[in-house]
Amino acid sequence: MAHELPELGYEYDSLEPYFDARTMEIHHSKHHAGYVRKLDKALEGYDDLLNRDVEDLIKNLNDLPEDVKKGVRNNGGGHYNHSLFWKILKKDVEPKGEVVEKIKETYGSVDDFKEKFKEMALGVFGSGWAWLVYNPESDELEIVKTQNQDNPLTQGKIPLLEIDMWEHAYYLKHQNEKAKYVDDFLNIINWDKVNENYLEAKKT
Ligand code: MN3
Image (cartoon, helix red, strand yellow):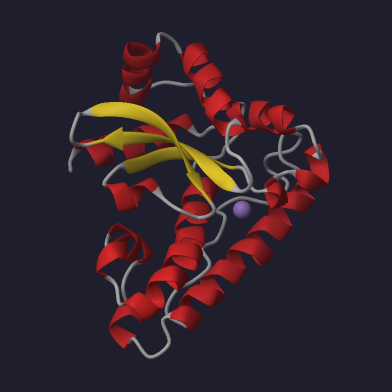
């Protein structure tokens, strides 16, 4: 197997009471693991692609052979998106750093940003993700949404943080209360990691 399920780096119950341990466990060990397994399956017979980093595959999605494109889009996307998701979650991290300065400049305040982000997240129809991305062309931040496991990297934008709006991400705990799930997410953003992502993205 060429691609690997990353460790969470924390316990499944670390994000309680916002995200429950059972959801985290199933989400990571079943859903995310499934994307990794199916990504490698989709790449069978392409040894060069099996050994390529998933981020690199997603960025160059449109140049991949036709018969693997869909598998990489769905499962490579699933692998990349979840890998980032786990890293940008942590309790009790104050919003600070250059990214927060840029957020204030762009949206007015962190609370205004949260409001706009929540609106975008709740606007995802069906399964998908909402994102805060850095657009290297304009040197600006943007809030965007994607369907299924699509990723803004394919459009040349760099993800800084994102929320999983698939039902499997919240249904066990929040059921139909999607807005409550988004509020809980907004309370456990790892701003240190998001700032790191921003500083890295600015280098491109
Ligand atoms: Mn998910």
